Image 1 (cartoon, rainbow over the protein chains, first blue to last red):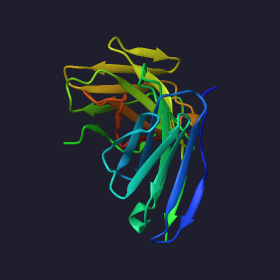
Image 2 (tube, each protein chain N blue to C red; image 1 turned 45 degrees about the vertical axis):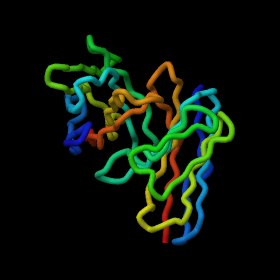
Image 3 (tube, each protein chain N blue to C red; image 1 turned 60 degrees about the horizontal axis):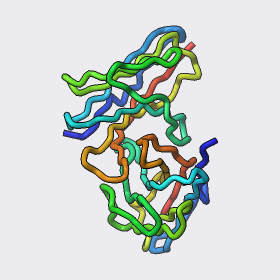
Length: 112
Length: 112
């Protein structure tokens, strides 16, 4: 069965802190994605990776960076958290041969 | 105009009734279409892919109208458990890595 896990379900951080969100998939998928989901704005792509050490900016990359050192793991980094980064963060993965994306359970981040 | 648009709803549906809603997309070259279901405070899960000929999965029917650039989802004999937000997703044309653009979601509330 397809499985994508995220390191935390809920996270509270202070403004200016460096925040790491981790995502692990066990399906040997090449593609991995980070989205944020906000009411009224839907799912917006932050970054995606199509291979180890390969990454590409999505629609809203500002204030974020990513790391993919191993195929199964994709990390999202908030270099200096700000209150406008309070959101639900969702990780997803997919195979290149199909566009179906499988999502992790999400991390609700609150930045105070 | 947004790339993918949905009526946010909510669609209030009596149990046992039929409900249908659409998702419009702006890029006529889009080739792949999906419906995802998202329960409250949970991750999106693939409901069904949408094929050119339309497809049916039990009480759910998805259709594609290329001429008018929309996809539709119809739910027959609505159950209380069908209450959720339904997200449509469309592939990003000429984009590497099988990226999808998601609509903002249509909320469906099935009531006894």
